[in-house]
Length: 165
Image 1 (cartoon, rainbow, N blue to C red):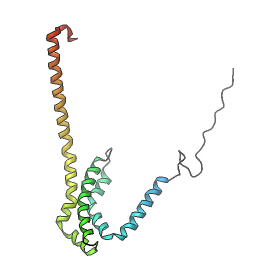
Image 2 (image 1 turned 120 degrees about the horizontal axis):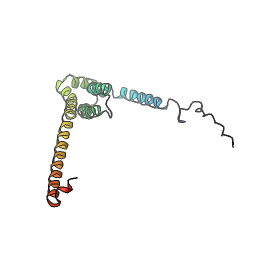
Image 3 (image 1 turned 90 degrees about the horizontal axis):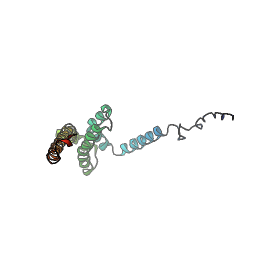
């Protein structure tokens, strides 16, 4: 009989490379570069950054607490919260991006209601729509089941009880 082939030891990744040959730590580096660019940009539009940070508090809290698959709550809250914050930030841009006007905007309770109202709408949609969809699907299934039973009864009438199975 022939010899069994010798086992070849698995190669370890090259120095400075991850398990699949990608540079080690590549994901974290891009994230930090993004934060650096955003941080530098925030300095130039500081009034808008301050208004946006205040407005996005509900979205930030949801991002930190939402552990569901797909993060549907974060998407629902964040997207509608973004519309409210964008409305206020656009007002700020139209008035010349001044810090005094940003503080004036943040002192108005109606602006907080607009920014955080989108969050409430997102949570309401997330809470109300799934049960409504479930009820509609249940009704459709019950209708189809009833239709099948009536078709089955007609077939039994035509072919006799032997078809019952």
